[in-house]
Amino acid sequence: MANQFTLTRSNLQGVWPALLTPWTEDDRIDEARLSAEIAAMGAEGVHGTYTGGTAGEFYAQDDATFEQLTEIACREAHRADLPIQIGCTALSTRVVKNRVRIALRNGADAIQLALPFWLPLADEEVYQFFRDVAQAAGDTPLVLYQTMRAKRRVDPPLLGELSRATPTLIGIKDTGCDYDVMQRIVADAPDLAVFGTDVDFLERMRLGARGTYSSVAGLNAGLMLAIYHHCAADRFDLAEPLQDAVRRLMYEVLHPISREEGLLDSALDKLQRFVGGGLIGLRCQRPYRSATQQHVERVRQWCQREAPVLLTAGSK
Image (cartoon, rainbow, N blue to C red; front, side):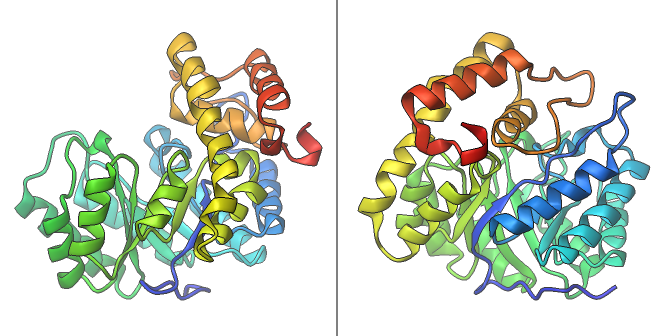
């Protein structure tokens, strides 16, 4: 199936919330809630969505679950007029290529993937990996998910080489680099669309980022869109109070919950989406812990008290 949207290095931009996976009590995909969640995203005016990151719990999905999720996500995203990137991260090139074929069959608009993450890859292996995946993906663009869970970074010089050798590599989701590394990425791979994280979204936009793959958009998409539009128009002073609220949310409530309760990224992402009125629920795939209603009340009460701008009308 042909992709519905043409994503390129020049037009990949904006706020892309993660598509979280709603589970039934027996750990199967809840198709009705997933479809409704995608429709709700489309109504929020975000630029696109993506599956298969940590937030989407790709690591807890077998092949059949991946195929079912990909089919539903592509169908419903395009019905909602949303471009969708399908996360195809896996432990070997063979499995990644098989997932790419499934994504292409369902009309994915781009492939997002991290490096195989059980053992760290050498530079030559990174280069060969992208060559193999690009060949499998054909004209469908690729986005690198840069995460330290891959046990290494693709440093700026190598990223520059990859961008020149792989025309279909259009962007990078970088979850951990400091501002110096960010500037080097922009210098060494100037054509790539660099996306960052929520906590320092404004500063990354100031340095040349094009957008964010966002968890906070699950809590309040309108707020993240406002930060993006202010920054894109060089109105950084107007974005700063909104960015400060996001920063405080992370450091004053979400990070403490993670430390105290042992909740990992996917649980925190679902917690934010639940507070924001999302339909996916709190349940994470076992053995990973899920947030509880007590965590929901803790986040909601903190927002009401400290940063009501984070709450939508329906979540106050």
